[in-house]
Image (cartoon, rainbow, N blue to C red):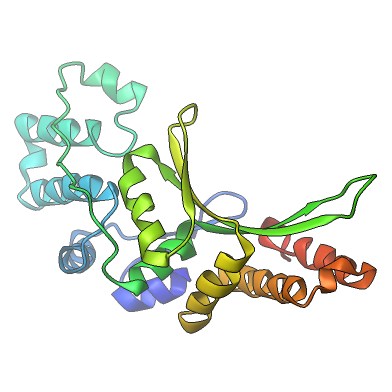
Length: 245
């Protein structure tokens, strides 16, 4: 997936990032112009758009060599203080006079392109096969799709309900998160799966979707009620997501 993105932009290098992850990094000013031009033409619609706008201001500041002056460097620090997770403790200590800039206002936005939704699910969506076994009654098999974001994007996630014609949103105030969930089998089988068959994911998550789909077919045909069907589902579940080899 990162190689596809790299080829699309024609810039950047891929580095190992942690034990099980990789990172596509674009750092030169000329290369960043290409990325910025793309996101100017195809704007983000989550609250991350505010971070992008601050980032763009920082790039422009460096392009104009303002960061080489004391005043320009402080401007850059003030931008960084409002960007993503803000300043590190070390930077706060060294720039004690910083004043975070006001974050740009991102008005409530809605999905306008199915390709945006597919890409968003590629990055943030999760496919779950839930197996509940009991001593005194039959094993229950269910499917669930979830997508979790910071609660600041609650309105956007709530718009998924109308766009997909199914699902619900659950807010977790303790974790400051909101989760979009589809768990009703008919919604999954009739609304969700056909859409992702028509517009397939491109990364490794497509394999999780295909496994999710296999289990849906086993449930639809009632094979999940048989011992053989249950074992097939357990095998599929044990090879999904982080367990996939």
